[in-house]
Structure formats: C-alpha cells, structure tokens
Image (cartoon, rainbow, N blue to C red; front, side, top):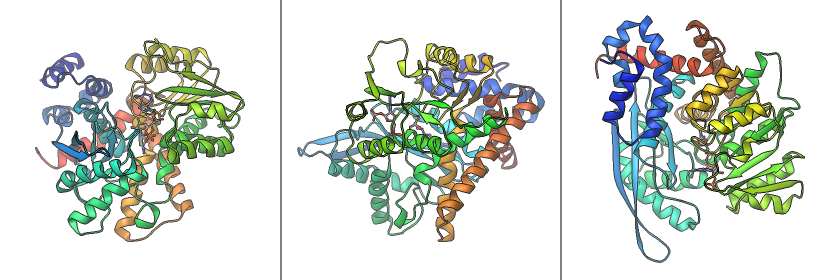
Amino acid sequence: MAQNVAQFMDELKAKNPAEPEFHQAVEEVVESLWPVLDKRPEYRSAKILERIVEPERVILFRVPWVDDNGDVQVNRGLRIEMNSAIGPYKGGLRFHPSVNLGILKFLAFEQVFKNSLTTLPMGGGKGGSDFDPKGKSDREVMAFCQSFMTELNRHIGQFTDVPAGDIGVGGREIGFLFGQYKKIKNEFVGVLTGKGLNWGGSLIRPEATGYGAVYFSANMLETRGETLEGKTCLVSGSGNVAQYTCEKLLDLGAKPVTLSDSSGYIYDEAGIDREKLAYVMDLKNVRRGRIKEYADKFSSAVYTPLESGMDHNPLWNHKADCAYPSATQNEINEKDAQNLLNNGVYVVSEGANMPTVAEGVNLFIDAGILYGPGKAANAGGVATSGLEMSQNSLRLSWTREEVDQRLAGIMKAIHQTCVDAAEEFGTPGNYVNGANIGGFLKVADAMMDQGHW
Ligand code: NDP
C-alpha cells in the first residue's frame, strides 16, 4: 500500500500511462485527502482511494457514419462509468477532436466529487467522441449522433447512467441522441438531460452552469462582505457556459469584458452588455460563426488571434477583479495565473473543468485569493440536470423561478460544504481542499456501507 502521495501517484501513473490530465486531477484530490486518511484509517484498510481511481466500467466503441460526400467516416466513442456509490452514473458527453481515454477519465473522476457536492443522488460518469461537430452540416451531426446512440443505448438508462451535454454537445446534439434512443428502446424516459423544453427538459438547464459559477463567486465574495456590483470580469470561451456566465454577471451589476474561442479573443473595454450578448448568442448558437466577428460588429472591441507557441494567453492579462475560465482544461498556465494576480484579479470561479494548471492553483492559494475550483463552482450544471431528472420522475415541470431558486440554494450549500470541510481539516478558506474533502466523504461512506465491490 502506498505510504505517501508520491508513491500513490507513481503506482497510478505506471498503471495508467499516457493520461496526463487524469494524473493531474487525481494528484490534486489525493493531496487534499491524505490528511483525511490519517484521521480515518478505516478508509485506508478498505482501499477506498485505490478503488475510487479505478473506473467501475469503461466502454469503447466504433462509430461509423456517412458524410455529405457519401464517404464513410469512423470515430471512436467512449463512456466512462466511474462510480455509482450514491446514484446512477451522471455526467456529460464531449464531442471534440482532442477527446481520448485520459481526458474522459479525468472528467469522470472530477464528476464523482462534483455530483456528491450537489447534495443530489448522482454517481459520476463522462463520455464522448473525437468527432468534431465544427463545420459539419446538421445532417452529418445527426448521422453521427444516431450511430453513436445505436451502441451507447445498451449501456445507459434512467436508473443506470444518464448522460448530458458538454463541449460540442448542446441542445441540437441531445435532440438527435434522444430521438435515436427512443426509436431503439420504444420508451420515453429521462435517459438524457439537457432536453428541449417541450420534450422533458428543465427550464434553466441551459443557463445553469454559467449562472452557478457566478452564484458561487457571489457566495465567496459574501465571506468578505462584498458583492459583484461594479466588478470587471474576464470570461473565456463563448459557448454555453461563457454565455450564461455573462448573462448572470449583467443581472448582478458586473461588467464582463472578454470572450474567446479556439481562434482568438475579444476585449471590449466598454463592457459586453445585453445587446452585445444577444449578438454573441445568435453568432454562436444559430450562425455557428467565430468570435472575431464581434469586433467587426462592435467598434469598442479589439480582436486578438491566438498564436500557437505563445507562452501565455493575453486574455488573462487585463486589469480586472474577477475571472471566469469557461472554455477548456489547462487554459490558465502558470504565467497566466501570475498575470491575473498582477492585474488585480482576486476572484476566480471556474466554469470549465480543471482550467488551471496545478502550479497556477498553488499561486492562487498562496496569494489567498477567492479561488473556486471547477468541481464546486461549475456544479450548478449537473445539479440542474439532477433537477431535470426529478421533474421527469414526477412528470411535472417547475417554473423558471423555482428552478433558479433551487439552483441558487444548491450553490450556497456547496459553498458552505467547502468552507466547513476546509475549516475542519485545518485549511480555512482553501476551497480546493474543501471541495475535494466535502465531495469525498459522502462517496467514501457509501462505499464503506456497501461492502467490497
Ligand atoms: P461549448 O462547446 O458550448 O463551448 C466551448 C467553448 O470553449 C467554445 O467557445 C470553444 O471554442 C472553446 N474551446 C473549447 N476547446 C477549446 C480549446 N482546446 N482551446 C480554446 N478554446 C476552446 O462547451 P461548454 O460551454 O458546455 O463547456 C465549456 C467548459 O465548461 C468545459 O470545460 C466543460 O467541461 C465545462 N462544463 C460544462 C458544463 C455544461 O453544462 N455545459 C457543466 C460543467 C462544466 P471553439 O468553438 O473554437 O472550439
């Protein structure tokens, strides 16, 4: 049995080679948990840590489909069923060319702790494909989704595994996936979340991750007697999470000034107001264009293309109070983290999953800023998916206000769990330890209760 974190990580890396994102996610959690194991040796003898890093099941499958030229294309599909101790596997599907086993394992691992934090009964999973929806016609996306679900359907179910969206999987894709599931199974059940409003979806689900990340930052600011009113905010990405982060920031009187995509970013010193945000939503969700067009439309904005080989991302190098990374993993490197601190940023609330490298996280913690890690700050998305599952089971729909209130309440509860766990284990104000420990305890105790499986 490993005697320390370094030895545990050596064994994990030997068993799971070439999965750097998975190693990074596990190391951060294990560092937080080691002091917990010292206090609770029964977890150690039951090998909870060794079991929690091993997926319960990994499904890998071929996804053939036909493109608009009549050519056959072949992608790879994956579903990681990580942990079902406290409920059915739950977590998104990602369609992006970078998708591989290690990235999905990191996301599924994070999801276990995040789902536990939400207070709802959901286990952890994640899936996806190296398929790139960008530049594909609607018919091609549908053909791919139907082929993907033709295999995935046999592994999921409302009581087994309930996937949702993530990068590259929005309302359009969930619709095509749900339609194919229903056709194969001949049953109308809540097997996916993020569904359309008139076929089982929940109000506020599209907004939930971004709204939740902003609520979490407001909760953190409240510990210092402050609000978001008048704060200048850097936001990355321009997809689902980024859009609704901006919307809630505007509701609470803050000023978002940046947005990005994988080609570059815009800086709008005058602020991205409601009219400009409506333009972005149309640009990204309907016309499926690039963020560069924002600067052509609004003269107050400057567009900067992202050049490969740069040692930092200039988006993170503007004067601001708060930052909401909402694009992808490791988008804030050590230099970016230092630039944020140098520019006066003292609130970071992660809409994306693991957007900050480990060295950057250490800089934030050493600087004593309000740093909300993704597994706590972006848990509003899956929490509202949980509320969608509840509504499907009840065959009822709650109002917008009711779901938003529940979301705000859940984010507050997650924040309190983080604060309490960090305090109990001797690191007050450290939301990383708070989220990791708070999420872990419930899953570990459930695993203890259920025996060695
Ligand atoms: P979308 O696909 O809607 O948007 C993703 C955005 O990030 C796009 O602007 C995209 O630009 C950009 N992006 C993606 N990959 C890269 C990359 N490698 N480099 C630079 N930019 C990139 O996804 P979401 O908004 O749903 O997800 C964003 C993040 O939030 C992810 O980390 C996801 O895991 C996390 N998250 C999402 C939840 C949800 O409910 N949707 C829930 C919890 C977390 P481009 O169009 O050029 O690719």
